[in-house]
Length: 222
Image 1 (cartoon, rainbow, N blue to C red):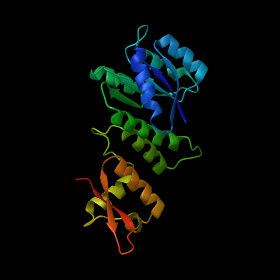
Image 2 (image 1 turned 30 degrees about the horizontal axis):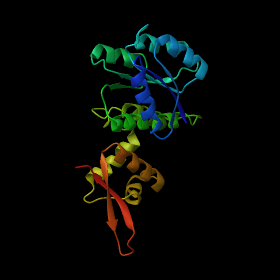
Image 3 (image 1 turned 120 degrees about the vertical axis):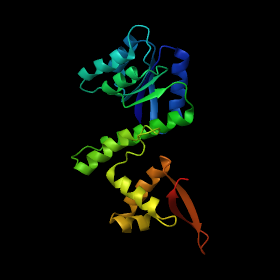
Image 4 (image 1 turned 90 degrees about the vertical axis):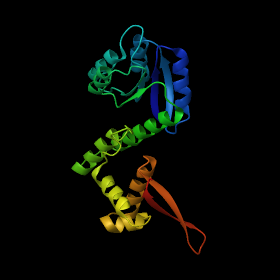
């Protein structure tokens, strides 16, 4: 489970974020903080993996709090959740290391989608061991792809190749055909297809044969 600390100056909003978080698979809320000082104490005590961080805190800017985390050996990741819309604040959050920036208000579907994208990246980086260039490209691609308004099409190289095969196919295509086309394993092709569907770039097409059991194939989202 990804242990998450919710930080917001409004306790009612913090409660809402915590409740929504409980509905997303793989996450648990370990606490709430309503000031930067409370957040620092909670980070030191609870050692969360992830912060959901508001910019407007009564005693200190959330950006200042975010920058100060760089000195920690086990600094948590951070998703900024705020009403601040000015580009200077967005850039400052990016420079401060925020994984993503969610502008209030937003619905549960958007909230869950970005957390799920973060979970994919978190799970990949938690594996450990060494990484070749393709693995590094994929990790950075997963991080960049969280922004569904512009960066979603900046895909990891292998995933982009899968998308091109689906896009250029004359008809809906399945994982086995994609795998044969690219020289990769069928499970790997299926994993990329599933992720492309989750990102809204392709759609699942069910084909029914004589056995009555559908075959999964994919086509570009229309």
